[in-house]
Amino acid sequence: ATPSTGSTFSGWVSGGCAGSAPCTRALTGNTSVNAIFMLLPSSSSPKPTTPSSAPAPAQLSEAGTLGGQAFTQTLKLGDRTPEVQKLQEFLITEGLLPDTARTGFFGPLTQTALITFQRNSGSISSSERGITGTATRSLINAKLTARASTTPSIAIANNQNSKISFTKPLKLGSRGADVQNLQIFLNTNGFTVAPTGAGSKGLETTYFGPATARAVTRFQEAYRSEILTPNNLSRGTGYFGPSTLRKLNTLLK
Image 1 (cartoon, rainbow, N blue to C red):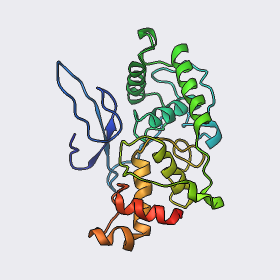
Image 2 (image 1 turned 90 degrees about the vertical axis):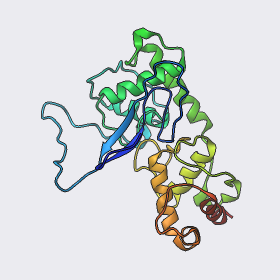
Image 3 (image 1 turned 30 degrees about the vertical axis):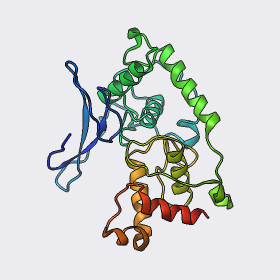
Image 4 (image 1 turned 45 degrees about the vertical axis):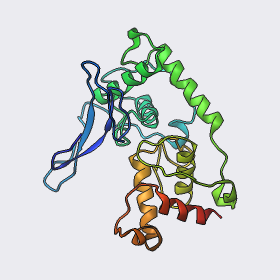
């Protein structure tokens, strides 16, 4: 997927591809893969406006966005409620939506991501395709409960850093406990991944998306002489490679 001038690639939403990492598919038949491209802001571009007939997206607190709170509504295309934004936060952590998609409006992008989640689960009937019916809500709620019970206990601010050590590079699309530990470190040390919602302090995720990459970039530029300069780089890359990993582990000692 190559963006044209004035736009940027944000991620995949269907066809067996997810997140924003490179995706390779073996073609054994007709296959549809959808990519998301976002327009870059420019001084001549008009600012988006919210229709006067639609309420502005609700702003959710960190505690009420993904912290295991149950989904209770059947959401569908065209809805605009606080629970829609909660659903978008969940789909972002699943790598099915870009982190810029938390709008509170259930549009085609959210619907496509939800359908992909349902298909990947293999347990949701076609009658719920594209809506959060009973089975879909139960599955999402179960995933959120499981996440809440397995969140690692890390207290960087309390000098318990010796429990953490990073051993492998991480990049866009990476998943796992190392990503969550990295987000916790970044949020605790002034390199905020997200101000609210998925990736924010206390709601760190196991998915390395664009927001994590931006926070890593800020960390790299804060330690430019030790991470970037030795590699002949002038700007951070967002790739958690050997030099970045080594510096972070030094700070954790």
